[in-house]
Image (cartoon, rainbow, N blue to C red; front, side):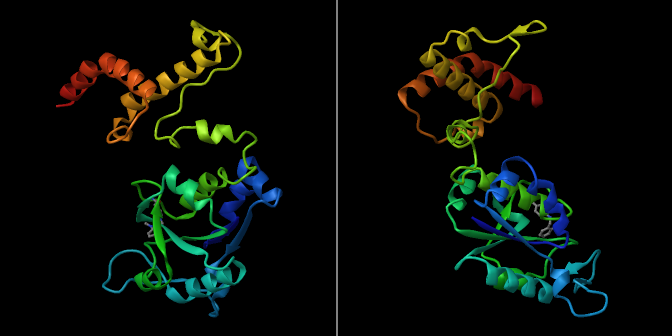
Amino acid sequence: MWLGVISLLPEMFDAVSNDGVFGRALASGRLTLNRYNPRDFTKDKHRTVDDRPYGGGPGMVMMVEPLRQALAAAKADAPADTKVVLMSPQGKRFDQGLALTEAANPGLILICGRYEGIDERFVSQYVDAEWSVGDYVLSGGELPAMTVMDAISRHLPGTLGNQQSVIDESHLDGTLDYPHYTRPEIVGTQSVPQELMSGDHNRTRRYRRSLALQRTMERRPDLLTGRLFDPLDRQLLTACAQQLGPHTVEKEREKK
Ligand code: 4G4
């Protein structure tokens, strides 16, 4: 997959380029990351990329022209019909489902804003979608872009040693991950759950699924609403709800 990033701080992407799953995907050539700095496309002696907002107010706004030229350079290198996405607090929530579907594209260009934001005329004319990694404001789109690129790169063939781990993982099936354990068998007063020590794969699978559903119901009940479950999941969820039900209601009452 070909990734292009438009950023005034392109060095920030060094942080994810050299090691880890993402770094290895780059090193192996399964992934390409090209950086385009709007400042390199300015012509004035101060290399100006921002200006004061019309209507007044604090801060500065990114100008159209340097962004337009950086984007043109990116598009010239990118595969045909590459989608242009602005990382923005106003965007659609980027989730695991989007990570999975977007990984099927041959290319993607991510635009990182700085200052107070970007001239809206650039957004309306050149941006195909706006994505947000969460409901908070950051000082630039670089960290969100790295987050999105990492989440997408995990779904490229060969990126993870064991592709099953992507499927098992939290969120892909709409539930949270089950807890993990490794050696030693005893840590202080806590031992590894017996269900994981029996060597019975069905027992292990059922136990993990049960805890995944339990945690989801406890921590993120919003993920479960409106979903359909197979008979085993329903059985596990019902048992779970019976344990949690009054307790959860109690907690909600305490808040009020
Ligand atoms: C676009 C407009 C994304 C981009 C304004 C970007 C949070 C997210 C930015 C800005 C971002 C997110 C400088 C406010 C860059 N902050 N939640 N900041 N700002 O995905």
